[in-house]
Length: 215
Image 1 (spheres, rainbow, N blue to C red):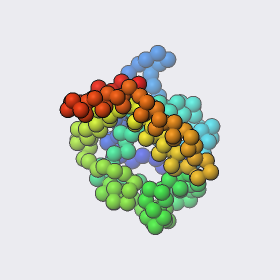
Image 2 (tube, rainbow, N blue to C red):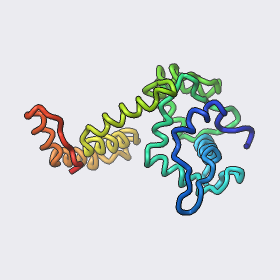
Image 3 (cartoon, rainbow, N blue to C red):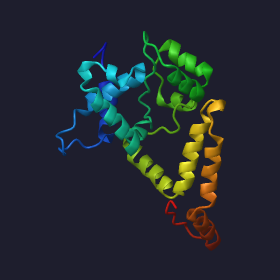
Image 4 (cartoon, rainbow, N blue to C red):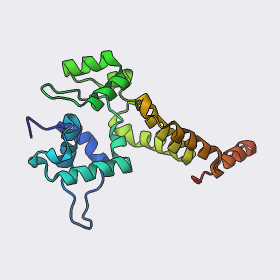
């Protein structure tokens, strides 16, 4: 596929169990996961429009739909927890869009970003963690426990607070002229005016766990 597969057999063996079940459903059986994930990787790597997806990956609409679905249901978040086996770096001969290079530079710093980009070398998970590309490292067999730890922690927090934090972080990453400060301030007001805030204060005073409802 355009010079070789996007994903090695070793990496695929680790991520396939994390992908959704492909049992039949309305509209027929899902297209093979590996073909679709290869398509998504190609598109993310090249920065090309979805409509320019090479024919061997199948319909671009399928890859686009699966990409959005995985972003919504947390599938891609699971795959961002790395194992010590290695994290692929850039491949030579390709152009990377501005947003991708900016993200890499923001996460790893200009020096590490140049190192990764110019050498196109593979870095292991521990190095990726040390330069800020990922936040946690675990062995494949430890992933279910780590995911359970994360989901339990997330479920215990106030939904409106999480929503505000996610949205405000998105604003922080924008260029200064584009930041919607009014939106940030409204999100904070929504938290303080919410039923969850009152519940959190009551729970603290009563020395019990709060029961948040996202209201």
